[in-house]
Image: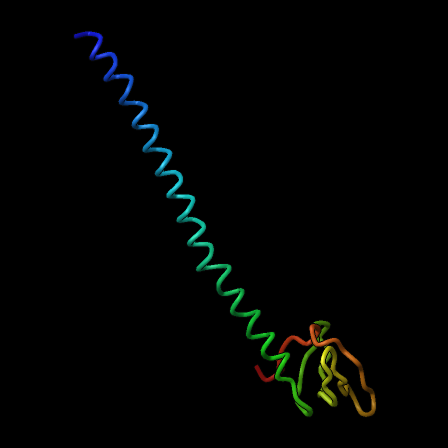
Length: 104
C-alpha cells in the first residue's frame, strides 16, 4: 500500500510540471499575438500607406523630404523626383526620401 502511495506522489508533481510547461507556452504565444496586433500590424499598415503615397506623387504636389526640406514636385520618375525648393532651385531626390504631404 505504501508503495502505491509513493508512486502516486511521484506522478502528481510530474503532471503539474507538464501543465506548467503548457501554460508557459500559451503565455508566450499570447505575448506574440498581442505584439503582432499592437506593434507589427499597425507598422505594416503605415508603411503601406507611405508606399502608396510615394507611388501616387504627381507634378505640382507639395512634399517634405526626410531631411525636412519643403518643395513642390516638378517631375516624377520611377526611382526619383525633381522638386523645386525655392525660385529656380531644383533638387533631384530619391522617392524613399519623401516622407509626407505638408498639409497632413
